[in-house]
Image (cartoon, rainbow, N blue to C red):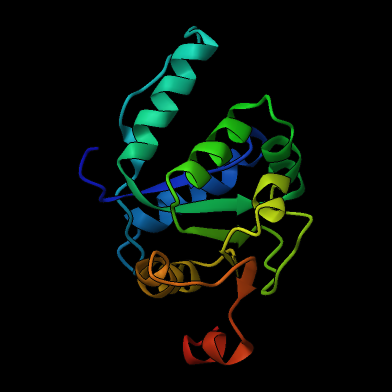
Length: 169
């Protein structure tokens, strides 16, 4: 398997504007938010066959050390349907046992099971839900993700309010 040093951002196509906002955070010199995006690898064209797209998604995830899942009702629906590209991504994330930070697009700071795809909930997969803000997402990637593999935690988790306060949020 290739060297894992990327952050993979997974989202429902309806939520692409939030992904674009994350890219803008990364480019903004006044916001401390950096990620090495796995989407830059193995580009698929709109005319690619579904099998090719799924193979490329798997190859991208091979380079990922962590995941940010943009949490929304659309992400829940597509990530749970078993047929969409997001459902394929969710399956591969779990197969590769990658840490998943669920960034709630409604800015909720707790667990919203209406935003987490069913396969992750059914498997009692260890996820961390945060609000969709660069500081807390960065904090989660810096603190939750590194300890994920050695943790015996199960199911969805979230940070208590004091963590947000500590970050000035």
